[in-house]
Length: 496
Image 1 (tube, rainbow, N blue to C red):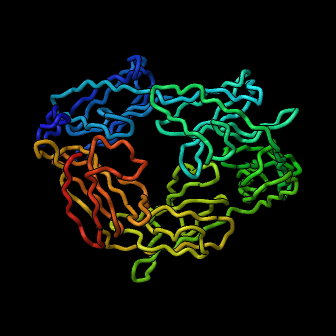
Image 2 (image 1 turned 30 degrees about the vertical axis):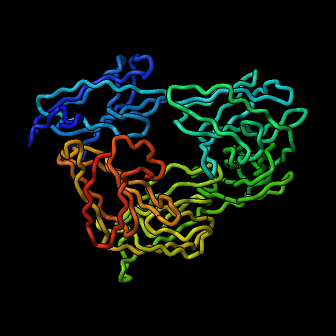
Image 3 (image 1 turned 60 degrees about the horizontal axis):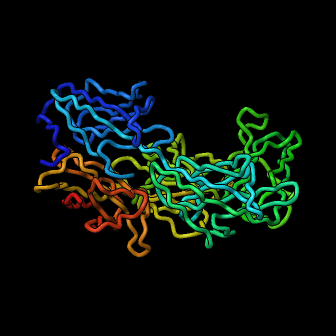
């Protein structure tokens, strides 16, 4: 029997079980107090998810559990989250199987997230104090991962970084006798000439120095109309800066480098204006003091849902997922419940996707206004510029989705209970993932099932070693398959 079945599950047992354990620091083994520990039953275990915090000795416990199979995870600020049994960063954890007589005592080691340190230097190799430094994930477009400010000697420390490759950049800064433009590590003004930095868990990558390059900065200011004290935010690929306009609506920002910017203004709900906002995208090559932000009620986007016969579908059968997108990256995903056929958004760029009710999939999408970029993939994330009312999105939902199911087989051709299974919607021509990776776990009999799939190309695998869920499934042994409408495809898997 494979190792994750060492704690045998009594068939059909529904008696109470207990899971105890300790969370410790990965390198020192010291107990970690106040760590969050979560318990998630795998499919086939009739139990609810639960969570708790470790005590001052790092100990935790879950009692009165239904016998079955569970995933246990722990996290704490400054540490990488870990699932019990996880072999490497972002690999899947090993399910813990318990029966009414079992009381496993687990130890979960949390490694610290990575850090990058260095010095921002002037043209004479003297450290620059109070200079902002930004770490970006090595991806395009750039996404801010961490920010720091140098001390009196120009030293900085960027912490809380996940393993991977990063660009490090000193932000623009104006001093009394001149300014410095944004500069990447290894003295580059553009990303094409920048050098990436490798970050690992439990490691501080040192001496990542940046020689700031002097250059011309620009002043950005303007006025909000109607005049009011509101938050105004300037966003670039370096990050965001927020200022508050004065009673006459005037605002200004610290000197910045020439380049592309997005400008937002928002009046809070308790202001005399009510919730109003403004948005403008601009390129700044010289001083700008003429910017005007006209506050207006939030733009509304109308959603229309139809079936394949053209009949309207109740909006309550669909949830809208949204995430803000700007030059600094992509925000957190929000799930929006529709109370009608319209939703109000802060103006700007958004990515939207639908989560239809079970038994449906999104087969087509028709925006009322053409959008730049690639044609929209109906069942994935799509970007929209929302900056005025009257825009409309029409979705067609089909009641004949595809599906895929099968059995995961481990060593000895035995069913791999609790094994993680990954499904990726994949565009074979562009060779890229076209929507979020789907993850499930095999049940106690090793069986898995993905339902409500849009027709198209997919890749599928099961592995405890898969450690890059953010990247495509470029792993030997991954199955490539085509899902058809109204068909439940059978695909057994070997545990990789």
